[in-house]
Length: 293
Image 1 (cartoon, rainbow, N blue to C red):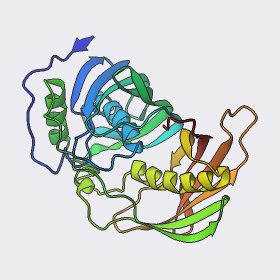
Image 2: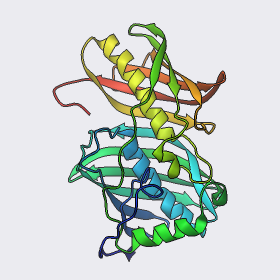
Image 3: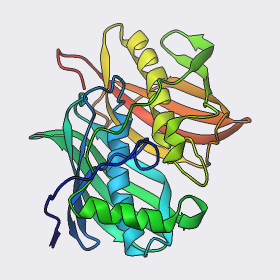
Image 4: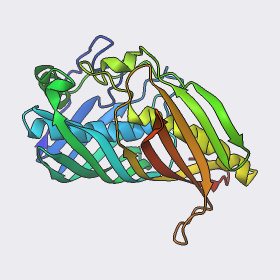
């Protein structure tokens, strides 16, 4: 196992490697079997959706995948079979990130991972797959290699992330407790495009997922008549890139959970661009019992 001992943390300007980067330090790498890292949510950030915890785990996996192929390719458009949400981290919390890699080559990376705050598991990813594409289409491979060297040689100083805006949603159709459709307006410009990605700006799938979760939460709450919280998200599929300035139609529809599903509420979500489905997932909710996820 290659251990990376913390040295003097290095600071970076805001922008690239700061606006949408959620790994401050890679603490250990065991070949292509396991990698651990750390990320501290800046105390001044007022909006940090739980989907960004999944983003942090995915980014840690991506660093190993990129380094394994000499920064010629990078994983994008992940498929997440099962995301389990246990708690909502708070600004100032430090996430300990653990990724167990099942396979990794020039075609893709398959992995599972979890994020913890202290002894508490916040979020767990299972059955996750990222497809590898030519890295030069998205970023400067030499700059990424330098970033990786920094992360493994003591890490960068935390705190440069300044947050993301809450999604701009406009209701299109609303059947209380059953169906909700809304228009999501992707900004033409945003700081996160500097990281995602410098050479080919793409709207992050985890921000789309956050917008879908907001719609699903509304429908689930209306249906239950009491506060609810999300416990699982399954079958996340992203089929196409979303460019700056795009307009998406998001939908959230009440469905019947399966007989083996422990949660009482299932909401199916989708995203359409120009009438074509580009993303979908299933979101499961449980009623609150005093402690929300």
